[in-house]
Amino acid sequence: MNSPHSRTTAASSQSAASRAIPITLAALLGVFVIGGVGFSQIGPMHNATHDVRHAAAFPCH
Amino acid sequence: MSLFRTILFVAALAGIGTGVVVAAIHLFTTVPLIVQAESFEGSAPEEAAPHEHAPGTAAHEHSHDGEEWAPADGIERNGLTVLFTVLTGFGFALLLVAASELTGGLTGWRQGLLWGLAGFAAFTLAPGLGLPPELPAMPAADVAARQMWWIGTAAATAAGLALVVFGRSPLFAVLGITLILAPQLIGAPQPDSYETPIPEALHHSFVVASVTVSFVFWVLLGGLAGWLRPRFASHA
Image (cartoon, rainbow over all chains, first blue to last red):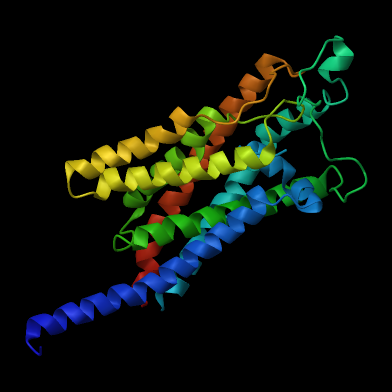
């Protein structure tokens, strides 16, 4: 249980797990921002982002 | 610096830098074509040449109807284009940098550039094959259906590329290529009729401009993110 090998494995899997949370949060924030700019169908939001959606080829209306 | 803050700062700086440059290019290339296309919106095909429409192909509705708020032409409208291009850059940079952290993080501008090319393939080329950039006054299928296909295609292409590049056996490569092909075989939602008052030459110019500017967007975004990432990570 306390061999150097098992400790190393535990440490590296812990660091992978601790990296997974910030990576997931950052990706979710990205999805939220893209969703707002490119996909929200709320009227004023659509009108404000209209030219960007056409120019960047998001499905607009 | 925590990993989340590193991703946030790299994505914010790459997004701002890319967004400002690309918005300026849009204002001189794609936006004038969009404005030109809007002048055709009053002349729907029905008025130009009377004919029967199949059910469900209502004339293209455009929601600049005065009921809802819309930006005034000029500085307000173009200022929003700059703002939202920067936000688009920030959002896509978050996805790009977060995904690259799964493989240990970007090590330099050239590696970032390759990630940018992958982003161009997943978010411009693949969705654009089924749903080419479109101008106002052009017919299109139901917007929710097109959004679903766009998102599914981008996700499948990104996952497929990742399997091809990082998969450890040929089986993963085969699976990745299948994932990239699948949405194109399913096909994007199409309108019942393609009739439009927009001249084909105008649409063609717009497709070329839009895809070319997107290429610049992804090259800049990936290259900047890759250049910035080691500079922030060294302060960790």
